[in-house]
Image (cartoon, rainbow over all chains, first blue to last red; front, side):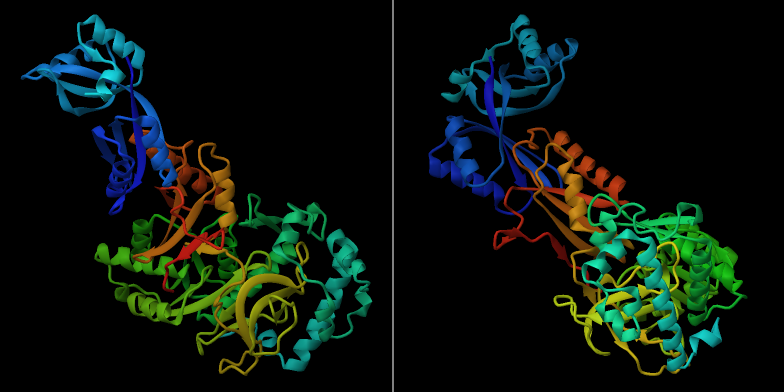
Amino acid sequence: MRVEQISVFLENKAGRLAEVARILSDTGINIRALSLADTSDFGILRLIVNDNARAKEALKQQGFTVGKTDVVAVEVEDRPGGLHKILDILHRANVNVEYMYAFVQQSGSNAVIIFRFDNLDEAVKVLQANGVTVIEGDRLYAM
Amino acid sequence: MMFNVEFETLPREALEAIQLRRLQAVIERVYATVPFYRKKFDEIGLAPSAIRSLDDLARVPFTTKQDLRDNYPFGMFAVPMDNVVRIHASSGTTGKPTVVGYTSRDIATWSELMARALAAGGATRGDIIHNAYGYGLFTGGLGVHYGAERLGASVIPISGGNTKRQIMIMTDFGPTLLTCTPSYALHLAEVAAEMGVDFQKLRFKAGIFGAEPWSEQMRHEIEQKLHLDAIDIYGLSEVMGPGVSIECIEAKKGLHVFEDHFIPEIINAETGEVLPPGSTGELVFTSLTKEAFPVIRYRTRDITSLNPEPCICGRTHIRMNRVSGRTDDMLIIRGVNVFPSQIESVLMEIEEVEPHYQLIVDREGNLDMLTVLVEVGEHAFSDEVRVLQSLEKKISKNIKEYLGVSVKTKLVEPKTIARSEGKAQRVIDNRKI
């Protein structure tokens, strides 16, 4: 029930994001989802791609610091209140969300949201117990 | 104005006679009491009795900061600890500081020389001295303090920091002499302006500034903004502390070295050869009268030259020009000596980071800012912002605790720190002094 996400350390200066995109493009990697967290000094680019191992290798070879984290992809009803419902379930179970971002594509009539939790297993258990669909990595990468 | 007219105006011949007598005595004493010196002398077969003229000093081996480190903490002391009444310390090149000691007579000598220095800068017993040098292990604060009391002036032991309060005290107490680092003087001017306090309305007539390198241009700026005569003072704890040399207010051109207590030499930093007057090279000091911590041919790593020409103030003591640089990579940040190797030691103790770093020094406003760039490798990296931010904070905090200097830590991508010829360039100093 885990999805692999890679993260890249970026200095906050011109052209760094473009450089990552160029390397992934040259390697033939497709970006499925991304989010950028930044401070005044640096940024952390989080990516879900169709081939983690190759993406990671290519970026490392070009001198980037790359990390790997497990996240959870959740189907959210694509209508008002869809996200709230999920967050409400998590809140009531006292599960802390580190960060989250939206997936580019839809899964049928549902949107997909990527969540990073402190306690991933506990979060997945809570979500599934409440009838929320958690998407497998393989299915997600191929979407 | 001279504090000790007799000794400050001694004719050359008499001065040199005193120097030789004192040199012979101190050489005899360190040979008898400090194993380090005895070993150094024995190694080259030099007997203390072979020092028959001042020229013979050139035959004596040098003492380096590394030697002081090797004998940490008290191995270079020439008297039993019973006779040591004060201990000071300055930054070492790595973790351990350089430790110096004083007997009560050393404190008296230092007080006299600082009184001479303050007087050369225009101070009299009627003055109120606002002493904003740091009090503590650093010699600046207490050095000026004892000199001011010896002179009979009133001293305000304000120490460093808390700038707004300093301005209030300046306004209310009406001090006439300011002592601090030159960059802090400019910072005081800036904060005073923000508070609507006009230095022209304060009572300062002179300021005695040191503990960091500065320039003629900076002198003009200080004099304009603070409305006082800005005087350069020099010293280092290994030799004594502040008051080794001082500019006279009459000429403001070169710093008189108190030659009845210290012998300065200029050497070629590579060969160790003594250079003739006027040549630029590394400054070397021998202390003639210190009891607890005598230093023989101590290499300061400061680059300057000596000027033997007579001075209009009447002092016969030789003048050293402003220090123009260092022969090592020591930085002076807001008066605190910082070696890149010390920063490296701190980084090595933080598990996550590799010691790939660079130091960037800027002067923002009038204060030195040290930024430490640290490369983020896989061990340190996280996908969470707060983890990386707390790493930055941890690095800054450890450096502050260890070196006493505030720094900004900035994480950078691997291999962004320029490496020239395989060796990383550790320091980029953007200050225009």
